[in-house]
Length: 229
Image (cartoon, rainbow, N blue to C red; front, top):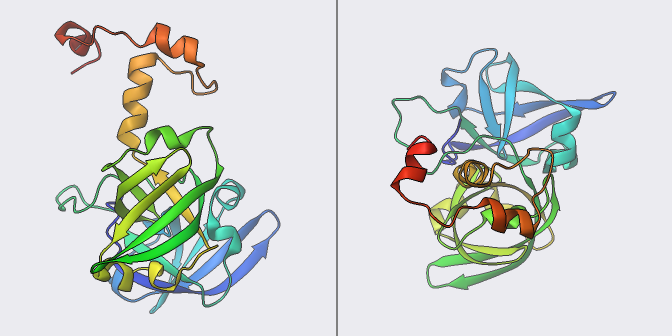
């Protein structure tokens, strides 16, 4: 688990193609202080396992599923990436709960200044599960390339976030522009709530009739106790 608070921006040193997977060597400094083999590091929001550690780099394998789901498919030498070590239970949760399992890709469709902040507009263009936009709500949390951000506006597959100077300058957003792709992970809590309320089958997207039938209108104390609250 991660918090979406980027610790440093690393750079991809090399990309090795290995049949259906790739091996990334990533340069870093801060996050390597206590990293050991087998640790998890969020790389642009993707949870990767460390397979080798050097003085100023680490190596991780990217499996086919991750290549299909994330912008790591476009990785090349000198590409900057957001890095964050896995959270400790004693740490502050400065952002929100981020699993490191990307839901899909979004394209940057706009950037505009608004006072001291910059508003980034996105459009979801690829998604693993259909209709992930239903988990994106105004003032809700979303991870963009592993950065914990708050949704300012959302409509269908479009959403926007407001970035303060510190967040932009200390993440890959500093070098992102219109047309670039970012990894998107929606708030995991919303997914669990949906499954508990409608008994969602993981392999089947419920239609409108099922939702209206299975979501109980009587969400009272009895129903909450039944759900384990």
